[in-house]
Every structure is written in structure tokens, then in C-alpha cells.
Image (cartoon, rainbow, N blue to C red; front, side, top):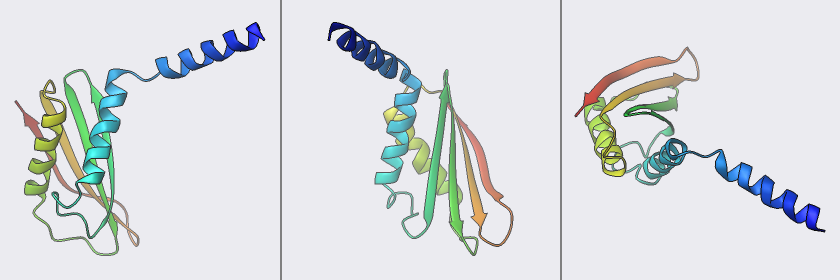
Length: 118
């Protein structure tokens, strides 16, 4: 019984130790973006967010899915997303935002990319 208990404690320690601060921050920002989709004007589209944090930098990818490319103000969307991200992670200095359009008929297309620095 003691061996099983010790094994369970070790397994749970290893599972919890794999998540670092950057991983938790990435998930937190992705969840915040999914919850606040109406702020970024993307509530009408199927959207996938991918956030990667390393050091003082963040890569933020927004992928829109659909048949036709949406006509949106991408610069406004990116600045709102950066504002939200900076509120959650003020220590991040550089944020690189990429907005892609994933067409069902053709290849993926980058419709916007910009780096925001403090």
C-alpha cells in the first residue's frame, strides 16, 4: 500500500512539474481570447488562437476559417489582442501577431502580421 501511495505522489509531482510559467501564461491568454471574442470582432467566424511565450517575447497566431476571406480591420483586431495580452502579461516586451485565413478551398494565407514592442 505504501508503494502505491509513493508511486501516486511521484506521478502527480511529475505531471504538475511539466507545466512552467510560460505554459500556464499561454493557456491563460488563449482562454481569455476565446472568452472575449466579441471584443475582437471575430464572433462570426470559426477562430483558433495559438500563443507561444518564450522569454520576453510572444508569438500570437489567430487563424480564421471559412470559405471567403473576411473583410475586417486586422490592425484594430491585432491592437485589441495585444492590449489584452499585455494586461495579462505586462512583462512581455515584444508581441508578434499573425492573422491567417484558412480557406476550405485553397491554401492558408497570411492576411496580417506585425510586431508590437514596448
